[in-house]
Length: 434
Image (cartoon, rainbow, N blue to C red; front, top):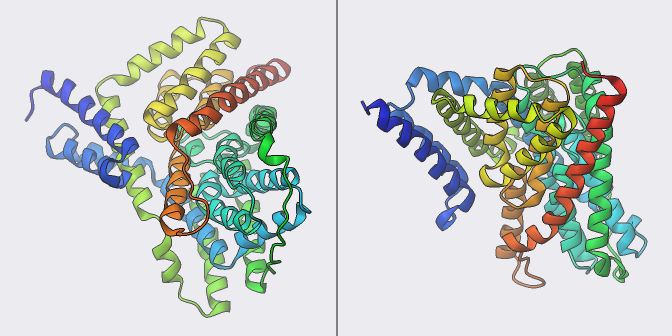
């Protein structure tokens, strides 16, 4: 047993090193091994009791179910060509204009993020858009940056738009009506401001024309069935949210039913789809739950709660701006999943509601647009581009470095975050604090 005095040093050190290794990925080792290894080390060294670790893992059950359902549906849509069809429609609908194509891709990315979560936009839509723009023989970077930034900019339109929403409000998800009242205007401002900034930053590429004809991809009957299933699932989730129910189980059950129907119709083996799910992501999230609970047990929440109380004394509006920006920037240091867990615990411990809690969520969701280390979705987006570069022996190699992303994010994120927080403050003034 490690003495308490040493444990107070070793525990946060293990957590900090694990997160740093997750973000830097030395030797290309996947993020999950650094986090799960760190969590296991905490248990082996008796820094975290096994019972406490089990309770921490169990806390994430709703998030796991939500992720399983969304990843399963995303893979089903990909297998049935839904995303390829959507990308093809966007390119053909551009009618030779790069500017119009940019608008269409932005619109598609927004809808996918809102109704299928930001991970689907980053992981599944990105390769489809990349394939389509390469066939159109235009510079892919503006459209790829769309997939990365809209995945965060539109991720708080609905509770289902980002798994981080479930993490931050895991003990008290607001009902759908309250959510839309609180985040409707801020999310619209986030989406619009991000669009105009990106449109300006990539103006030189978007002034060009598309001179290559792109093959028209028809959506199969099975693809239409998947789309219908997605629409039904969205109705189920919005209903569950309106009734103040957890979203994980309805998402998972709806995905299983849709997958079963499509598999029976196509006489295919659903096990193949299950293998495509990133189960390691679930292990990563579970490890983060253990680490955050371990840090909380050392009194970390007392510090964050004190800081939140200090920010509240600045006045509600100024305090919300400070909290939103500090949380937004902090995402890019520790990633939004662990930060979301800490933020959620702080909100719960401090009994924070209304504008201040909303500012925390906006910071968690929109802050990751600053850098590639900000969110899991952005990291997965970058990995998808690296995979394409490794597999693509001809054509343009994709090179999105940390600094190249930062040049875009350093402009797009702060302005959009300020607009979104301003919208939240305005809505709070109009409807009054609950």
